[in-house]
Image (cartoon, rainbow, N blue to C red; front, top):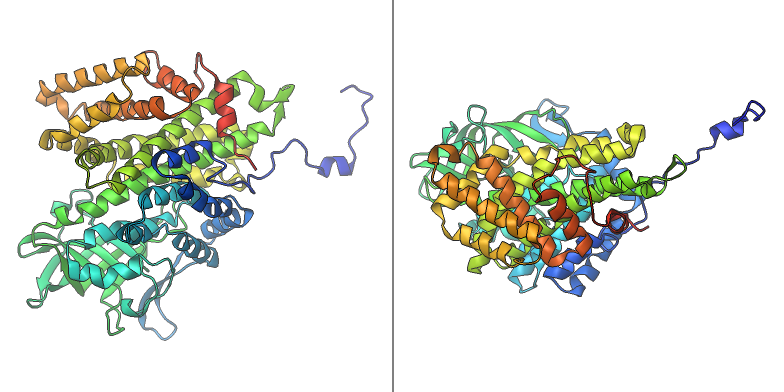
Length: 558
């Protein structure tokens, strides 16, 4: 540009150039190579074909806009109606109801359990892939969907309660509103474990459960500090019964249509997850049904916790994949410094590094879903026991770093709400905190290793399937086993080093899956960056391999 260059006119000033188009019109399943490959790895082609409609809808402009609206117009607590009657209802924007309707119709709630019961194979793999694709644009409505999915295996501790509630929970119909469960076409479940004096230490719960007779009904008296989705139809909660900490099913509305004695004290003002209502509850004379034996509440509800932890992994993967898709899409359509950003070597390194992180998370999450499909198999059950807390610890903890780096790829545009990245960034720490923080899951890994010897054998067997596929992985396996052996000989260091052990075991497991199943360029970059001694811990420090091929693999195809 010289001094003689004419000044831009008004039309030139107002014309927008060199801006990436919105990421819409793509298929979030079939257009995602890593996710599609993972589905075909654990299921057959008909499962992938059956997910195509969900993927197209997830990648549509309509779903993107509904996600924005649901987070802009957040839930509002309405304690009383216009006549002064206590109602404790939460009002949601129509976009929330649209997203919940579609998620439920796509079978992302508890429908997988019904499909499994009638012999449909790969039901949980199908759901996991759909979960990753669907909840990227709007993660908040994953919470009630997850709780509904997770409630079913716990409810089966009592066949009568399962028979009563499971058909509604496994329905693909979203039927919002507080009515008697037996009159509704579909039900949603929530969870209330924690109390303000204990948090994760649920043994300190103070809520009391008083038997009303010999039929398994009790009244609850106390508070719940964090209860997700207060407009759901039933909740699994913990309370102190005469025989100790016990699990209960608490219906929001009784079968005669009267509302249970439950006060919604307030909605939590959260960093992210703002479309979803999380609440503080008080119960006083609230009717509940005992689930399982008195004093065995944690053991009873643990199946629900395991399922919610799986969805934490899948949800974090969804958030990462969406963020990286936005970043790779942007750099593919943005020119700077004489060429397309995607062609710049350093940007290729960054996007490729982010891509292998998300592909590793996808591979591990889908492997865990396959273990749910085959949970009667001894190896799969043992692997699920150790790999769930490993994945929950590692994948969820990596998510904020991934999303922050993806946001940086968009520059200032990424810091603006319209890009969608700020929503994902606020969401990114959530799954590392809920359903057991990083320390809780690292300690759960130690608990499994010390109490259930078969889980270590399962981990060794699983990573051993990749033996000889990459010398860096082979070395990392031996170093991790040596670390575990040393810590077992130093019990005073075991807890202090729990995070280090969990991170190494998770990384090695991810590496083994990629060496076995991913394209060579993905596995090579992962092992060279994550499992080598000189790993810098900063995205974009790849020294070898084929970053350009990985970038091409991860960029969404409209």
